[in-house]
Image (spheres, rainbow, N blue to C red):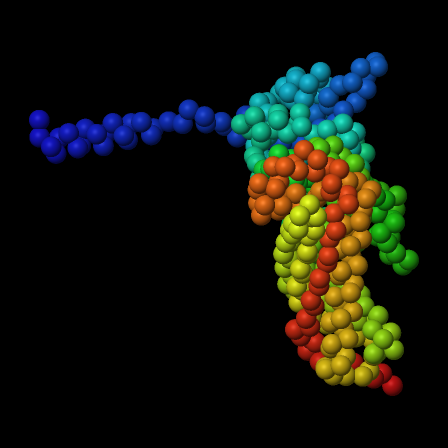
Length: 407
């Protein structure tokens, strides 16, 4: 048998092996999920798991109303389906009893955890997710204030699908640095990392009218009394259980502290400008957390460097004066330090949750010492001394140096 013939035979065999796909799924036969939510509920005095999901309607069914009836409009592109079970896995499997097509949840990019479930502990639901071959690890995790079901029932404001709207909000968060976005993989990693407590974005429902959606003179009353969703601060966990929330400003301080603040505005009142307002728009920030052990004394230093531009200046005097620039930098550093210390104080004293990962850094820097105190870290952590140092720099003053004097 010639070498050439053997080569051709091998090639033909390989080609035949690629003629099919064992895991192929016809898209027109699937119920494609866009968002998933999990809750704990009480039914007849018993605690149950509830899994909810929004599914995209097939085009030929778009005018026939919701599948199973969790909505009244026939023009909605999605349908919300919920099911109950004794376990999270059973509740998820029970969704199939409501669907005429095979469920496909790998398309979902948002996973919402209800507040009650989060307070009871997320270890079980994370275990289910990690074992599942259908849920992607880069799916975003959000913790609801209230039920996850209520979040999924909310109508989007700008996008056709609620999942698209929430995804867009998540992707826009670095602009404001007011919430901590995290996917399933990193969230699970936080939960199992020694000396580290977990955090996740908080999602809540609000009345559109509260946000000024309906303005005098606006002929549209679309926003009157209608509800929408927003990301609002950060959910804080301790030993895998939700213990509270950081508000927007506390979250901003937390992000500065761990080096995750990307952008954002800090409003300053500068004495050298007769306490006129100056907007410091951060363009870059970094943080370094350094543990120190002297005998049995443990302390940490957080060194933060921030750069920004001046985007607003309410004084007609030149902002480019060196003394003014220096004053703005000092004031910005002071404000950032206060934000970090407020977040740190809440984490240490109110929640006793090591969301800054001090224990993990101590573990890496002093592994032998960590072995000695690991079991007692929860008791040690609230009393450790943390020093925050901030250096702020103004890089640009905008396209003009002087604010125009209006006659």
